[in-house]
Length: 465
Ligand code: MLT
Ligand code: ZN
Image 1: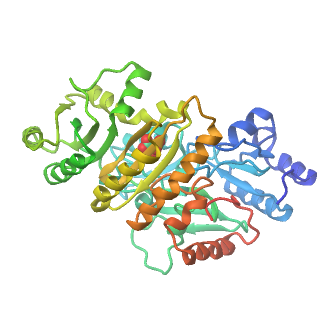
Image 2 (image 1 turned 135 degrees about the vertical axis):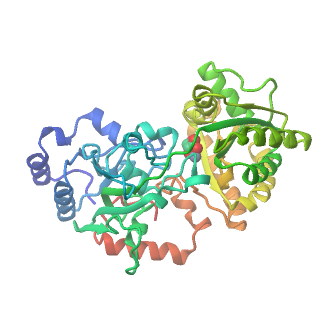
């Protein structure tokens, strides 16, 4: 692969895309060459911003004939380095292909270009009294194509599942420049292998997503949030079990006291409860009927009597619901200044207590002197274990230490049949650890599938596999 664009290709890109569609200034190279990980110095050779599928196909053909690597790029909010361009690649940003193309209120679907921002899609659905339910803190800048390429999860997976569950159609340009029109928005289509599902979560190594059809649903009735102070992670699991049985859950999240402390100090927010607790559960549920409030009260009383909960607060209006959510949603952004080493791990919900018991021991011994911030989607079996880099340690030394602990953590996960990347993807960051979750046979199969879709290896080379 070439690290510098050949002159003849540069000239053709200029002709194809015009000055606003082909950027090589230093500021753009830096901005488009990295995602939220900040793990590598951005060093792309250029940034192309096509406005049509035909232009994407032309760019792929040029890249193929000149052996230039392409990095497909969405909102670059990823946390695994999947959209990083640090080796002279050409970044192909979908940012100018950002239109909602249509909504079908009867079929309950929305079709958009890949660069449509998640929040814009959610708003377009809302305008029709419907909802696109995949949601996360980065909805204001993440793009649908990127969400699909990483099979993004988020805060309501317990109720609605991951992005994969909502994609009914995909248009994808492969590494040969071929346009695939996959599943065409159909709800029923049993016609052999479904390539749509290969593309979802493929992190740009098989094709460039240019258009998607998404299923929509009915918005929940009057969502409410309950924040509970909890003495231990195991108590959270008991609370989860009882909440699952008693409430129409929309989310079941958790965070540690250190996570709460960082958010409250950084943003000057109010403590949600009178006292402090080692952990907090944030439970969102739908108020489907007026009895739900009584059921919540009974549930909280039971949890308190059992010693699983020390205190609780319930939102009574939308403003309160939103401010309670901030305690959870602002964690990631708040701790970014400590260059956290992020572990995005998962087991089945049933295995979470076993995972916790072993991970807590590992942290006590191997991270004894470091700040460890826990949070995540515990109702999905997905924990985010973030280790903060102390000011006294260099980032390199810190990363090396954390990597060595990760191998121990991932051995535990492998033992429990868990995942080394629950929702952030593999990208560059988890590539060397993929073998803890996937067999060598599976990884080899992934490589041979890539060769079919991208015979010249121009699509996001060096990522995932
Ligand atoms: C979250 O759950 O807040 C996101 O996955 C981001 C993160 O893990 O930092
Ligand atoms: Zn998350």
